Length: 319
Ligand code: HEM
Ligand SMILES: *[C@@H]1O[C@H](CO)[C@@H](O)[C@H](O)[C@H]1NC(C)=O
Image 1: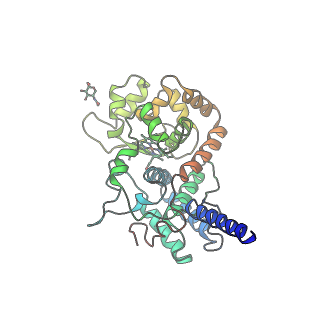
Image 2: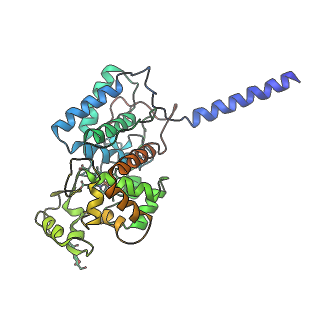
Image 3: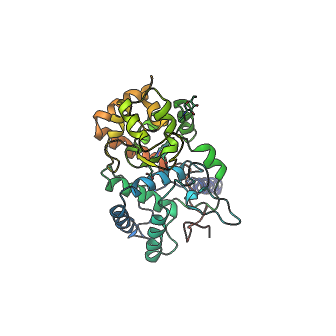
């Protein structure tokens, strides 16, 4: 009888260990022993990068979003195309607009010098994103760590699963839902457009053909975005404070100054997102708090953990 019970106790311990290794959770002190200087290195490099160009904080945040929406936060977006490998950099949403890769390379080199082959590119991107936002005046949060790097990428998933600037609310809601994110998450994460820039080709139709837009604002944006040239001319996503991570994005939406169609749909009609936009426009602290929580949620989309994937030596190439 005793051996019988022992057998089942051992079996259940084995089963739970197995469950643990396949469902490993991310934890904030993952590198506490293997790379104690990690967070200091990332932060110092982000301070330098933002001093050099404030927009880089926005560009890295966008990279992280585009990484997490394609097979989870696994640094797939960082992989270069080679003669034998198709990455995500030339997918529509990334081609000629995803940027910040050199900063991640620099951080990775510093981290490798301090702790060789210990820290994933996926975790470096998650930390750099958090620090960029905080350095631009936004919230900070504890980043759950322990992601590993993909040995694959998917250009087709990048093309089909990252939302585009002309998406309507139903499409955006569906695409976020497919990643386990709610309409509230969509509304608060879109507040990322409080920083950064966008190309004329992505808002041309909005400023020339849409009616739910402030007339003076449309006129202003048309100056640097002609009807049939200047595709890559830049304009700020936030009309007032594009290098400050504040809540002005929501004031823009209420004033019909959302620059992308996909921005203005959040404040154009009925639904719980409308009242949330109003809340965030008057309560910057609520926005900062909810944004941080939603970023943690975004950062946990299907990570590779345990022995899955690898710790890439160079973020641009699989080992
Ligand atoms: C809701 C659907 C979204 C759509 C359709 C969308 C679309 C876009 C587009 C078209 C650009 C301009 C790219 C360019 O011209 O080079 C852009 C920029 C940006 N996006 Fe989004 N985005 C969305 C959500 C998000 C989310 C959830 C985040 C982060 C949490 C994010 C962060 C950014 C940032 C920071 C920039 C500026 C990048 C820079 O200046 O380099 N976006 N987005
Ligand atoms: C505006 O709409 C008209 C009519 O549908 C179309 O011909 C034109 O190309 C549109 N302009 C822009 C900039 O999208």
